[in-house]
Length: 412
Ligand SMILES: Cc1cc2nc3c(=O)[nH]c(=O)nc-3n(C[C@H](O)[C@H](O)[C@H](O)COP(=O)(O)OP(=O)(O)OC[C@H]3O[C@@H](n4cnc5c(N)ncnc54)[C@H](O)[C@@H]3O)c2cc1C
Image (tube, rainbow, N blue to C red; front, side, top):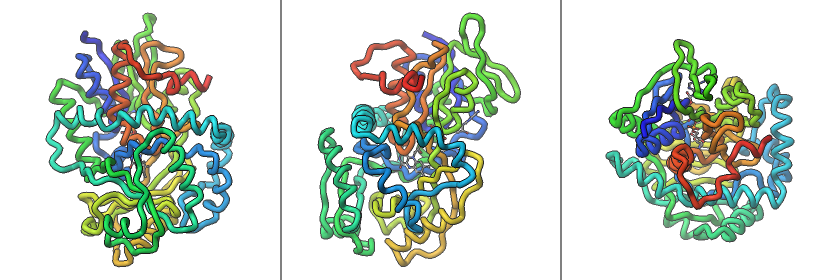
């Protein structure tokens, strides 16, 4: 088998797709307008490998919480007001996905792939020198008294799905993370979760492996994907046209520009998120900690403490919000009053569908075009498994997974 496949996007999705397709003998070219490892979403995330996170934001209690979250100066939610009119159709679809049935549908199908996420990464990690870039110290969520109610839903749903979780009290939290100011009341610990010490370095190691295996990279902006009379894709960039047997769109939040052109109305939008670094302070934490009341997290990384958070609805073109950065900085100092100057303010774009399931599978209109995008808050965790599943689909292999829930047909 030596079919030629063009993949648009060199984020964690595109590169993982490429590596699993190469294992099956396909000849792969990746297109990206940026160098791999540049400051796109796969570079700046919190680095959590969180296979437990099956309950997504389309939960039954979310709508009641929105007004308070929007009004709170320390809260995670924000809007760019100029973007609201464009976002209304997405919001309406999102609201329809917050019923109990829809919430459980998403949780079940997220759980199906999350459960396979770490073993799929191990298949890729076995082929690179990981050099301590992934830590196996678990991930810890903490909260103070006020927020307990909404956490109960999360814990209950995860219990129902068979997700292993360990409730921890104040003393246990202190034993795990002694440097955090002890404002917390309780928490939940996922000991088998992992974190990346530097997502960029991991991406670059995967990219080197891809090149070593004969993969090609074209640093050009993909403008359109057309189809020949025998339905073969023709990828047209700002410089050239390239023909393939099959193509994959995995451009994260930017995928909609291409899917619109092939006449599929997929309601992809973005939840913008931010990070800052406090260099030289990573010794203060052993593992990622998320303070749930304020919806932000801190991960110890090679760059220092990476403080990550915010769900901002504002599209792809609005400038970053200084207020959101300040919110992260203030929140970090609430946990660690000794923090001083922050650096590296960064904005990224979570690719999110209103039902909080990714799109994985063939295009509705073109049998040789495939999609792998829309992994919202979990695209880093789901990189390898999505790549593995998509490679299996393209190779037309049988699977015992139920993959229908990820098909773009659900929006037709
Ligand atoms: C603040 C924040 C924290 C996060 N934390 C976590 C976490 O801890 N754990 C987790 O699992 N997930 C996390 N995520 C989510 C995760 O980072 C994303 O879901 C994931 O990185 C998306 O990967 P991707 O490959 O789909 O897209 P991207 O990383 O955005 O890559 C898409 C690529 O496509 C390229 N591209 C786009 N359009 C074109 C075009 N027309 N032509 C050529 N190239 C193009 C871009 O340049 C880019 O390189 C976080 C996200 C944010 C914003």
